[in-house]
Image (tube, rainbow, N blue to C red; front, side):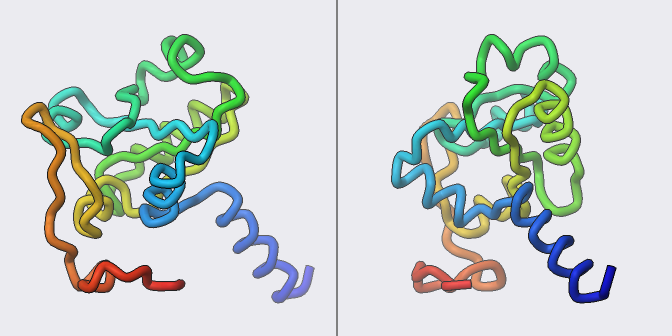
Length: 144
């Protein structure tokens, strides 16, 4: 396999199995059918804040509980804390073992919050200011 062919295969595979917070937010805002966002963190982490509308399903519970919570035809998107955590990867693996179509949300909850998307807690839905190191402060799409 040539270097170019290897690069094409590598990057195509990444895009097939990864998504980013902006794309997930756009899908949720558009009401994309069948998208189920799964927070794989602990209860304490979930209570601290999570993506509005996400399903709370810690990785260790996916095998037992996913079939009763997540439709088989769903496009599952997993997330955990952030780039320094591989919890979303482990959760995506568990969904793949069950036969689901699944993508990992790169950046995780950290970048969701840092890019100013809505965060739900027991006291309601809030938004943090956009961190200019993660997204345009104007709120305009980065167009990447």
